Structure formats: structure tokens, C-alpha cells
Image 1 (cartoon, one colour):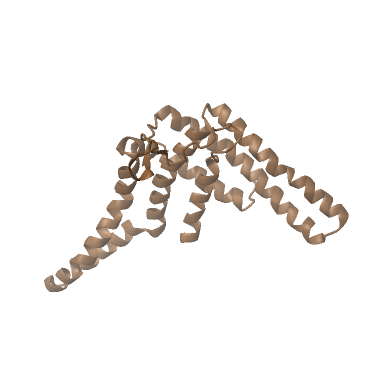
Image 2: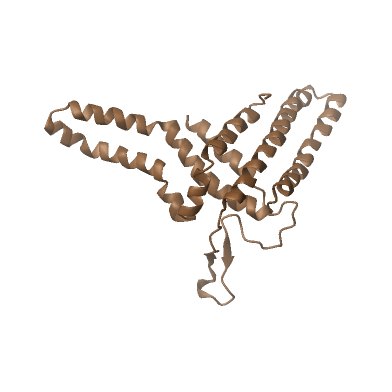
Length: 226
């Protein structure tokens, strides 16, 4: 189950753009997490966090649309790469020539990504910053569902209730630990500390759609034709 959840980070990372992508980000631009260098002579010469990205409902709506367009792109790309496998295995000149033409799929992916950003009205940096928040939130929520901690907590509490008082006390630390795990997956304290309550709440407002995008991307990676 952990392997399945791991694909979410892959999809959301692919949904982001690299900072050196086709939009021509200036050299030395800060990364997706947003850091800026201290002025020369600053204390320790360390990087400091940039201002937190303020994710709006409109920006998230645009990002969800961007993801849907990229789903089509990656679905086509993955199927094309799968088709290349037998050609490379064959090793004949004709097969290798067809395989070379298949590599153009990767080149077209970059252009399709730029087109999807433009259609969504998002810059490369915006896609990166939104993807980072979305990844932190949706991956944690998906992990909670996959591990089924909430269901396990209910079973543990029911077991505890049937025990003698002394045994209930012995089990109490384990129940409390499980309860804290469930609360972490529900309330996302780490994501809220890093990105702010407002950003997390905006992402959760489209949790169902973002999770569906994840599930559809799993199918795209598997080469399932929708």
C-alpha cells in the first residue's frame, strides 16, 4: 500500500514544472519551496524563506484544470514509451528508427506542458509553488486513508472498552498514540506550519478533485486507456 501512495508524489511532482522550463525563469531564480539569498555580507550567507505563497481559490481552480490537461499528456507519453519497449528489444534498424521517432513524444511533452500552463493562466513558479502545497496536503490525506488509522483506532478503542480497568490503563498509551496519528492525518499540523492554515484549507476545498487526479494518474502510469 505504501508503494501505491508513493505514486502520488510522483504525479504531483510531474504536475509541477522544473524552474528551468520553457517559460524562461531568470537564472538563479529561487526554487519551488521559495528561498532567497541573504544580501551580500548578511549573517552566515544563508538562505532565508521567501514570503509564503498565498494560494487563492481561483489559482487552485486553474491548477486543477492544468492537472487534468497534463493527465492526457502523461497518459499519451506513458503509452508511447511502453510501445517503444518491444521496438528496442527487437534491435532491428527498422525498429530502432521507429523508436527514435517515439522519443519525440518527450519533446512534445515539454511544449504541451507550456501550453497547459498558458491555458490555465499560471506561471512556471506558480505551478511549482501550488504543486508543493498540494503535494504536502493530498499525500498526507491519502496516506491516512491507505493506512486506515481511523478504522484501527475505532477497533482499538472498542477493545479497550471491553477490558478490565487495569488493562485499559495499560493500553491507554497505545490508544493515545493512535489517536494522535489520526489527528495528524485529519488536521495536517506539519503542512499548516509550513504553508499556513489558509493555503491548506484552500487545497482541502478541492480534495476530492485532486485525489481523483491522483487516481487517474496511477492509471496513466499503468498505460490504462480511459
